[in-house]
Image (cartoon, rainbow, N blue to C red):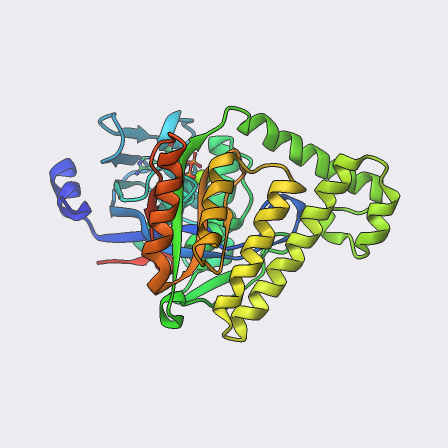
Length: 372
Ligand code: ADP
Ligand code: MG
């Protein structure tokens, strides 16, 4: 059932409109966001849709076709638990701008918690719907910051600005070069298909227990290194050799090495894409992976095998994406080699007795927009 029909069934009236906000994949720039650095995400075709209509009171009604509950009613000042906190947080922050009550019906084809950023898609689809319903004009960069604040303050997740910026600002056929310190961004052409290339996403189906604790530890290590180096954040390290020379701890040296070189790789990747050299991006991806594996030490065996098999089969490059210790790998490969790469990775997993990977090829898509 489409979201408009589901809205009618749930609320016994027609919605005033349907809005869509996409998930994203970050091409390069891993563990750079909380170091005030650069990232390069692109929006994918999968996302969250919200069918919505105003109410003549201040109550927010939310239902999701993916939630087990029958829906939630949120009054001004209410704090709600669970998934409804995402749209409720957005609505609460938009109240200051004149947004009042609404009924929302949420539907999504984006798997939640899979690293494709369903949370930001949910926030951004809700934000766009409420703004357009109430004629509130907020620029998309400001709206991204508002959605991030909703997740920080109402859900309690200390996320950065990348996911919301990608969902709201990405354009079809482009990746978004985003400076996580300033929130400023620019469009960079990214159309692998037009260059005879395919970007595969390999869900390694692996989740290693260390994940959360190690993520917090990396953040703390970066803060400690920045403190020792006397810079506000690792993105401010200008002379890598001097910085490495001044740090006694080999672990901190490896962390700094990754963050500083990864930032340079994002800039180089954006430069290559601007020059139309999409295939050359592959070597940047592989360099990022090796750095995440050896310097940042967040890769996992299934990711390493996926990247090795892809390269062995002639892919241009590939890397793990996300925080590490589980999740997905991206691979850039000539379109006519994509099937061979898929087979090689699947075969290597089977030979090791691992769960079969799930491999897809999501194309770059446009950012959040009104559907009807
Ligand atoms: P990710 O953003 O990587 O998908 P998160 O843990 O940040 O993972 O966000 C997932 C959460 O977002 C879910 O647990 C749920 O609370 C909420 N969410 C995402 N999609 C939906 C949906 N279609 N309906 C209801 N809640 C959703
Ligand atoms: Mg999220």
